[in-house]
Image (cartoon, rainbow, N blue to C red; front, side, top):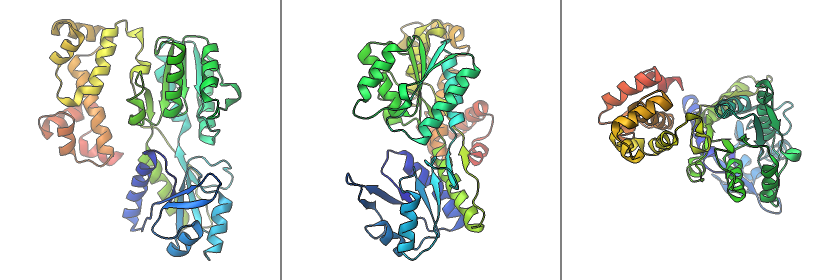
Length: 387
């Protein structure tokens, strides 16, 4: 497996692929491949060898999973032949620049755009826009095109980024100029969390109110970005582990039938994580919106409805009434929903239900399982097996 050094997404993809490898009794070797400023290849982390040719000659793999098209088809083919392997079956993670005859698994851009659009439509805004990543990549273009189609279907106005390209050198000034000219209010779908953070910083420089004048949804739900932006950033959570599993399953299919390359597989998003960047004033009471954000951040610390009322600076009875009027449910239900959302995230990571119950603020595993079934509609074990 050949991987570049990028954030926390790729290690989670590896974990997903590892599940398939364990079930099939494969030996899976994660490798970090990179190029320096001069374009010279090197292996940052490898079980052996300093070049791709040396690694392939040492491992003599049956196949490879390559993340984000970091190694081109020509480069891989040349290295495999030099290592005496002949043809090496390689599955890509992420949309390749040239999809012809490629076998790849990727996050479903249409599902990302659908969740973002559904969230942004809550605003009642009539204008929508897409903020691309600073690099012109197939997945960034696919997410933008999917969002533009949904905006048209909703009968709203779509405002494209000029040229659909940004560069690291002029990123700030181009985003500033674009945001300054966008009609307000406007809902913005950002290609990923990095692009979303860029939009929020530009809004801060231009003194554009978020989410009042501009609302922002991004993709990836990297908490080290989304929880540290100001305001916090709503984001579509991809099934990253599922993308890794899908790539490994495609490789298994291909190895079983080398003459029949399997079709690409799109993995839908898991959910949208709502944060302050889309907590709209349409609720008519900012006290409730702020309380919901506070609950999301602190629900697993054992908070109770009385704590929320104190945070809102009102009586418990008044807090309950405000929640029922604005959110159509109780404070306690909001707390449990936030806890169970966190529990689902930890269960996807393979953490045991007993430990999840403690982490999410429940006094007993039995209490956790009871609440989980009521909210999710399935027992913990059945839900975990279904993901």
